[in-house]
Amino acid sequence: MSDILEELVGLSHFVGDPRRDYAILGEGNTSAKVDEETFYIKASGQTLETISAEGFCKVRFNRVLPYFDKPDVTDSEVREALLKSKVDDASPIMPSVETFFHAYLLSLPGIRFIAHTHPIAVNSILCSKFAKEAISGRLFPDEIVCCGVAPCFVEYVDPGMPLSKCIKQRVEEYIEEYDELPKVILMQNHGLIAVGKSVKDCRTITEMYVKTARVILGTYALGGPNFMTPENVSRIHTRPDEHYRQRQLGQK
Image 1 (cartoon, rainbow, N blue to C red):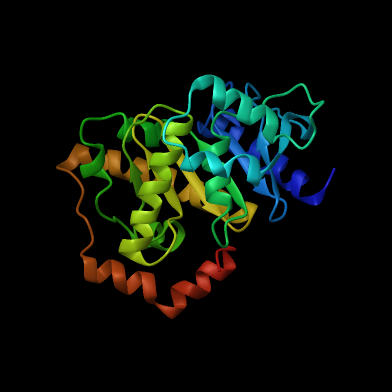
Image 2 (cartoon, rainbow, N blue to C red):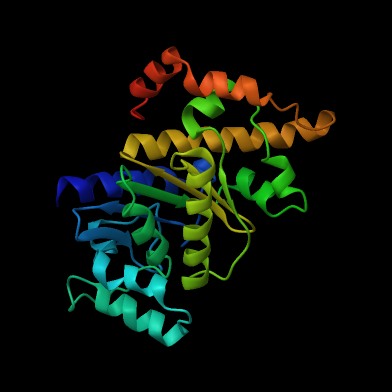
């Protein structure tokens, strides 16, 4: 087993541990960039808690990314694309239908690992009528240090190619607004994506955003969130001592 694949298996077991309530059964998926040409992605139907190296597909970027430029892609075309994207044609397993957004995100500079989960605390917010309002501000410094200046919010879209295209659009808009990549992507009525340069990065982001979600939910018992001011957020986001802490957490 390669070092990257070993790390990916470890990340999958961490976020798939049922004691954390991040994912159960076949929920969620993980991926890791191997090089400029290929990446590993969880196969469809695999369980993060118990997945082994054999549960991942090695996929070619150039067999997946061109589909973002196609105006309409049918379900059968998606299946064919996923089958043809595998490095090992003889492998009986199928890459996740969410391979497309993993390919896009892993093609961005500095992103080498992805953990997509369905945490109960996060989805309690994302499945609510007030999801956008609830995540519209920052609540405490460590949220900013670990999860960035803001999450990237993606409205509900059918999983697969439509969702992947929507994620690409929203991430590009986020970069335009904040001049940096998001660390957290929140998909309405769906779940959380943590992106980072390392396994430690993805674990840190996931853990802290799940805590953030629990804090958000708790604030509604006492009148609602008391968001930090934009000036407060900017100060935390740019402080040299906080950048030092980010390095200690594996984020710089």
